[in-house]
Length: 327
Image (cartoon, rainbow, N blue to C red; front, side, top):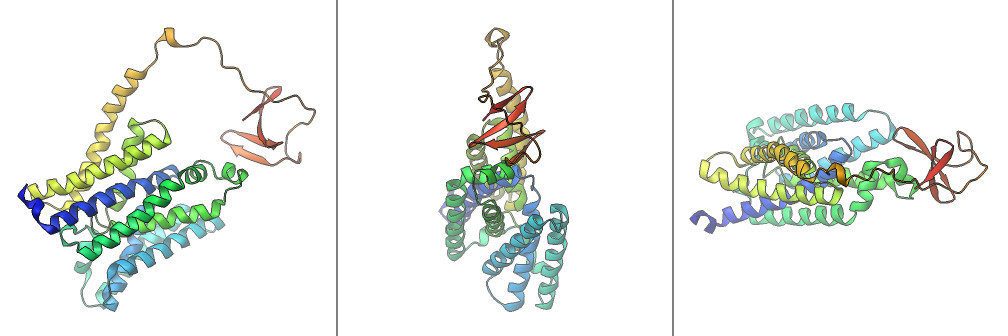
């Protein structure tokens, strides 16, 4: 363990821990919105920023952040306006960003090889300045993603219902994709732009297998991310392999192990027949009223799964047989 006395190892460990903590945090909302490949798309856009930095002879991180944020705003705008589906927008990010980055690196006379440290990560070359930037951006991500978690979860689970609550859905949607873009750029020196999506998505999937509930799943994903990032870097030193690839493989190992662990937990928690209340749970029904909800009835409607709820006197009325349930 003597290598822990080296300054570059300490910086790499701290940077990997920060990225392992922040990536699954914003990844929780990305997975909830079924945009698991968003990280890959934004990673390819960030390559364009790195290529632009090489062509202009400037620092790569600021350009990568700026280009990646602009790309995230563009794809979210297209999604909201319905002018392109999410899949088409992501495809444009994939190929356009990658091609632009390689082209600008070639124009700079450095070729695609100059991009390799950003594509696959380069933890051992992180400087003190890089660490301060990564730490500052990670703090911004964590403060916003955790502080606004009730609002972010509401719009990720059901945008229509979030609107009925008066939440600025469009603003929060932009905030989520912008935070995802920042997460991608700070991770390009750890796991690399081509592998960052794995650190955003796989810990979340593993935590969802083990933990029940949004908060437990988020904290569990953050814990898995930190352990996988720091453990992967330590393992890479002993095995003399690429840190980014080892971090991702350990993350996948956590996901594979979550299946049998979840099976054991669910088996342990399975209620016995004697513990099950045979009586049905009573519904909370609304007070009887003559008004019949339906299209054009004058009350706002909210699509909720396989049925439609109607907002009536500040509550949601769900048609159920000959009465309405209130929630």
